[in-house]
Length: 169
Image 1 (cartoon, rainbow, N blue to C red):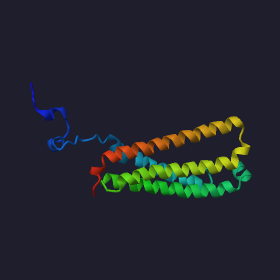
Image 2 (cartoon, one colour):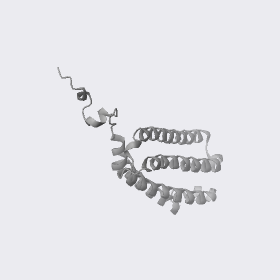
Image 3 (cartoon, one colour):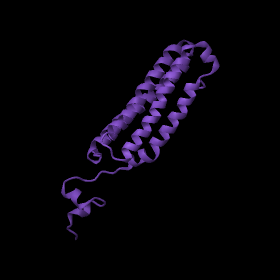
Image 4 (cartoon, rainbow, N blue to C red):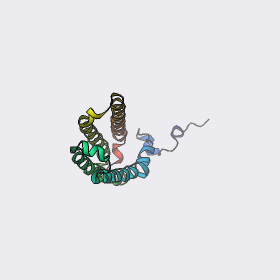
């Protein structure tokens, strides 16, 4: 029988176990820096292009609601900023910068706020043209997006709070 107490902690360093710190897995961190934040930046930049150029809405919608073009332009600029922020968060995380966890949670919070604001503005403006069923489906879609963003904010906050000691540069 092996009485080595460190055998229970495969993959952790002896000093981490002796210090009472069990190393936490970093799979979500790796997914963020190698996949998610790159894809998010690209998707936001491409999406921003369609909103800034006015191709995000049909000609009929823009003719019926002229203010929609201005809302789309503002949202496009904010979405472009979100793409840039995703790249900043990616490089801050990859370099273990002290502000990287806050930047990452801020990225998801920023996305939550601008998405909620954009959808509220568009829905309040165009609600009269929707059939009741379409309005309910659109509301459910927006609600799902809001809930998903809120969950991402909460989960990332908890995840990085537990790993705060790693981000010290």
